[in-house]
Length: 337
Image (cartoon, rainbow, N blue to C red):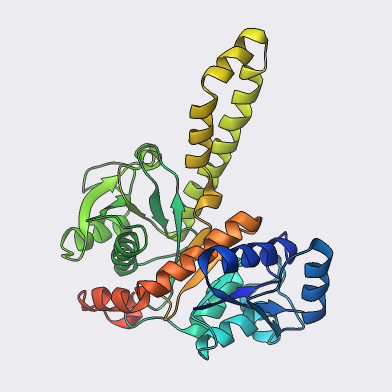
């Protein structure tokens, strides 16, 4: 299996990307096609002592910056690592694509170059987030700020398929974010989406979920529009960092608190690992014709390796085909999803 990676995308590129790719080659048994400036890639590998065994390089002379307007960047930077990588995926030069670069550019590029499965007009960004009881899938996390009810219904199907096939969750519960549990709550968009999801035989719909219950992991798939999802995602990240930051001074205050920390050190280590987003690697762009994974912009080597692991799992499970079969059951015209 060959995974294509955007070697120039992300805050820590190309060093973290290449190190993560090298780790994936040795630990996961995959082949890597690294896309980016050839000279820069080989120089970085030599400088950091990164093995290039199992890593092939596909030259791309440009890169897309985070601050660039996505559609314009994809249209004008034809030789960027992101565009060249997506084109390579569409042409069958690899089985999946991973990038820590611009989310907007990846969304636009995947839609135009890789295309989507039948029944999906625009793919959705889904993110695995650590929860109190268990991790959950939040979608959309920012790809589609404005959604129609039919799109939210399709998100529920795609998220359910992903949790079953990739995360091995049997009968995942799907919930719709709202400001109350009652069916009558929310805007007309969410009330209509609720009725569509309630009547959808392809998912196990658990009804509305209030934001305060989202972090508990009470639902396996949490559905919302991209604006709401992005707010939930960033608020969750901020709260996690704040919580960890508040714990440190408590346990280092005096000798007694330091001794208390030693008593719960193993438990704290397990807690930290459980809440570590790097363990999941990235957010799949669900609905694309071939697997596309968006790694966090600040991804380190560990996160990159796990994003590649995610991509590998999607290919092994033939996720795109299964997703299309499930979406076909909705009888939803392509223009509606």
